[in-house]
Figure 1 (cartoon, rainbow, N blue to C red):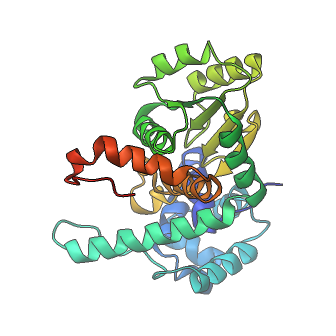
Figure 2 (cartoon, one colour):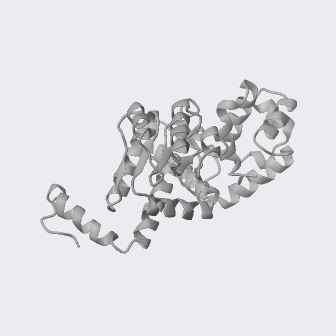
Figure 3 (cartoon, rainbow, N blue to C red):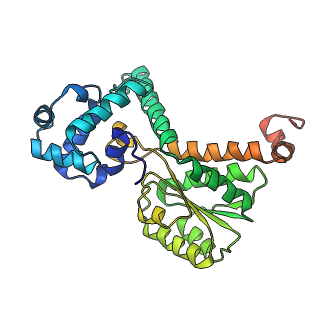
Length: 288
């Protein structure tokens, strides 16, 4: 059984698969996290304009046997997590309050991600990167910039990386994969048909794969060599659309820094980078 994230992460991960009534409850829980430990099923049903039966279905849908167990989990998380329990104001008229609200939510998302990432899978991912002759990145939509950034970050270490600018070009790249290569997917949902087609190509070529995702039981993740589970709290800030790769970037940076600590020539590569790019950055001599 996969590790369970915080109640908020489970709600945000499953939000798009909830019924309309369950989404009303989800919206209420996300907006009033600090109040939930003191409320009853009927009180939440009334406040969210649903029914006690819908609350019970919602509780089971997000992975809890009873409302009592969900309520206890929320109480525990409110006490343990950094920042205040409930989201505050996000408004152009309240810039300071907006900054604080978003910071608190992001802090809790990273805290959740730290607890969700399996340590053995993390080490496995680092070893796969170290053993690969070259790395390809794959993503769709607004995950493509995150994949490009990850590719550039690892390339600074002298690792041969490539990230095509479009999903179509990524698809073509996977047609020439070898068993000595590595394919890294960045996919919040793990349900993209195009990414799953790329996974088909990687499996056919015997190429190991890493999937960094918010949904570790998604079709893409279930076929991966290695899965890194990132939390998502997007819906706690904006229920209309996913927008952040904060936790995925955190995992990529952890891999980068672990590689730096384990690669004896990492400092030499940094010196080469600064020699090549130092003038553009206002540095006249090598840093190292």
